[in-house]
Every structure is written in C-alpha cells, then in structure tokens.
Image 1 (cartoon, helix red, strand yellow):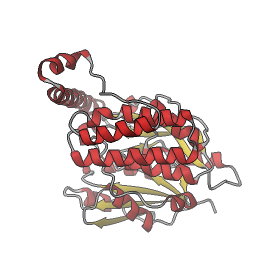
Image 2 (cartoon, rainbow, N blue to C red):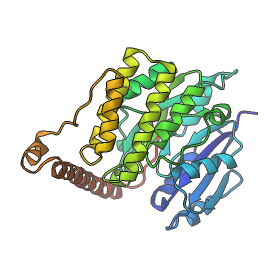
Image 3 (cartoon, one colour):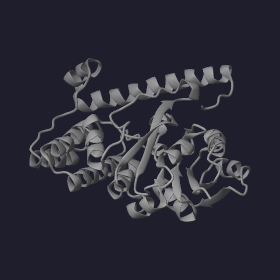
Image 4 (cartoon, rainbow, N blue to C red):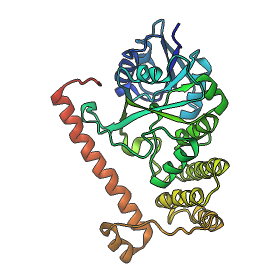
Length: 338
C-alpha cells in the first residue's frame, strides 16, 4: 500500500475560488489521498460549496471562526495521512505535484527529509503564473536554508512543502498568536525537526495573489505588526540555535532591516527593539528607504504621510491590475494547471 497523503484545506469566505482548488486536489495523480476541508465559520457559501464535493476521500468539517492557524491545527487533528500537504483554499497544485515529491523519496524514504518544490504567483489566470527560482530552489541543510531565506528576503509558499506525519508532529501546532507569517514561523519549526530540505523540480504550486486582502498583508494593523515582530524574533532564535556565526547574525540584522517598512515610523517601540537587537548582533539598522515617488512627500510633510501614500498607491495599482486580469480571464475562459 502506498503512503496515504492528506491534503488539508482551511477555508474562510473562499467561495469564489474553492471549487478550482478542490478540483486541483482531486486531480492529483497520487491515488492514495484524502482531502480534509475545515470551514472556519465562513459568512458566504463556502461550507455549502465544500459539501457538494463530499465523498469517500473528501471530508468537510466546520467550526466557529478561530483564524487560519487554529483551523490548520483542527484539520491536522482530523486527518490520517502518512504525509501532509497543506493547501490554502485559493491556491492550486499541478496534477503531479504530490506524485513527483513522493517519487523523489525513493523506495525506502527518510521521513525526516522535508520536501519542497516550485511555486509561482498569479491573479486570476493560472496560465500566466511566473515561476521565478530563488536561492531556496535546491537541496539545502537546514541552517543554510534559514540563512538564505533571511539574507535574500525570500520564502517558500505554504503548499510547496510535503511533510511526513513524524515531522509534523515533531514541529508542534501552528502558532495561533500569529495573524500573518504563521506559515513562515511554522515551517521553521518543521525545518528544525528535519534532516534538511530536498527540492523536487517540476512539483509546482500556483499561488493566487490576494493583495491587501491576504492574511500576510500588514497595512496599518497594529495587531499584525505585533505578530510579525514575534515571528521575526522566533526566526532569529531558530537560526541561532543552529548556527550563531557572524554570517548568521548578519542575516538576522538583514531580516530586521527588510521588515522596517512595516514598523517605521508608526511603531517606535518595535523599531527600538530591533535597533537594540541589531546592536547586540554587531549590526545596525536604519529607516526603510523611500523611492523618489514618495521622498518629496516625506520632505514636505514627514514620514507618516509618505508611508500612507505609498500604501494607498500599492493597493490602487494591485486593484487595477487584478481587475484587468479578471476581465481577461472571463474572455479567455476556464484554465487548467499542468
């Protein structure tokens, strides 16, 4: 009997995209699979839609709204799989994503190997997905993986990973304090429990961009800023538990500098914490850079108006691009991943 793979899908107000996501999960060429959907108290038709897919391999559950991390923990508690495939309710898997990763394990798999794969982003048309390799698209020991993530300000999308039950249990539950970057922090713990990362070329994930509506979008939310700082502190702790070299400490400083845009100038308390940690690590951080488009606003009115203008323009640009892509999607008709 081939190992059972559990595809776990937390869903909240996901009615517009859920059917496409479920079809990509059902279309996996790896036959021994189960799909567990947990509706997190959606206010739209997500639960009703999910139930139209119920079968011997598709199980649907619901709970009062508790957030993404708690919903993922619930999904894992309900599954039986030997391997775990996390999948957000608006993302897609290529048909052979799981099969390629399982094949890479060989006949006698090391259950402490963490499998990753390719990912790219799209808005409404999966065929326009751009797969852009990063420094994480290769086999890496765990400390090198973490250093590259922090040095290069890059990451691997949630669904790229295929994780054994043993590693999942060793990592512990998703952290319900984290309103964003809960996946980044969680997979750090999975990584720490592993023997390293094996990258599987061709195992593709299609990540649907949600703009300011995504969980990872911080915007002006102080709760999300607090959660992001907690995640950053944990990232640095995890890396230094593996490697406390000069390069590792510099990677921690780089992480804090890269995220200054989320805290400066609205959260001087976090900025001061970051400054002190940076100095303890032998580095130094400063205000985030502003492009010429906003520098004149800063010069005339100060940092806060410049930052607000930057956020609003980003939201406007994304909204216009998304609207255009949606129109083109309707003209071109339904698509499939390959």
